[in-house]
Length: 293
Image 1 (cartoon, rainbow, N blue to C red):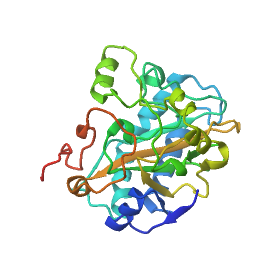
Image 2 (cartoon, rainbow, N blue to C red; image 1 turned 90 degrees about the horizontal axis):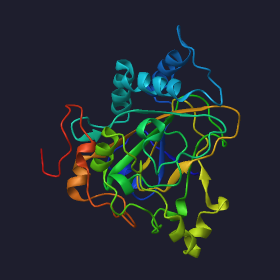
Image 3 (cartoon, rainbow, N blue to C red; image 1 turned 180 degrees about the horizontal axis):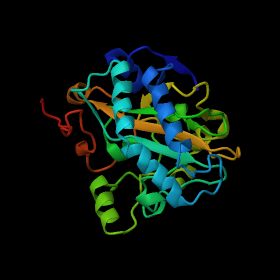
Image 4 (tube, rainbow, N blue to C red; image 1 turned 135 degrees about the vertical axis):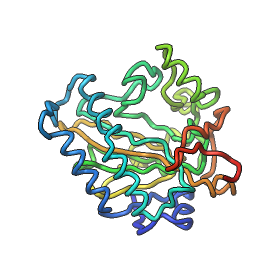
């Protein structure tokens, strides 16, 4: 995957991301500190987590994810990543940090059932999807960071030829609020919209462009690098068979000014009924709104 190196995420670089470029900020000090903090949580005193095990019990993985995501220092460092990237806190909204633990040989997550993987919160190997099939917010940017070294066999990948081409999917009728309501009642619900495999099979061009020769794994990034891309990109996890675990973290952001101006990535195939703006909050814990603040 060709990466476009940037020094700051400003309106010009956001526009590049909305057009399909995958951006990278190199060796961000706070991202390096985030890696160090994660290593301490993973290997520090009292930790019993087997770093490269292939079948760690789910409860242990869930505990590590929750520890990382709720850690006060981790929260501070994520805010510092945004600041060092030149992002203004007041006009920028985000969801929450996520830790991904992808063990070797784990296969692809069953995203059709949110009762798995801690009600969908702790997924590790996601199938091809656009985040915007769920969020319906075309200004969404994904921030992705490897916490330890990665390689071509344990990373994520993109389908760049399908960035601006409609792909059959199950976003019609999917609803974030319904997902949350079902979780509370312990009922299954799709964790996220995914490919409509029957529809894809009937579309020769889409089927062709999903073949391995068109798929671009994310390589050339190291711990401390921050990758930023549009949530409208079709992307997935590379199925890990390396014998080593992939550790990465991510967060999503929305620039409120771009949202209100209608500046964003193209929506070529998203059909979710709602736009769940309340998914995102700013540094002052205010919910995202379409109206001016």
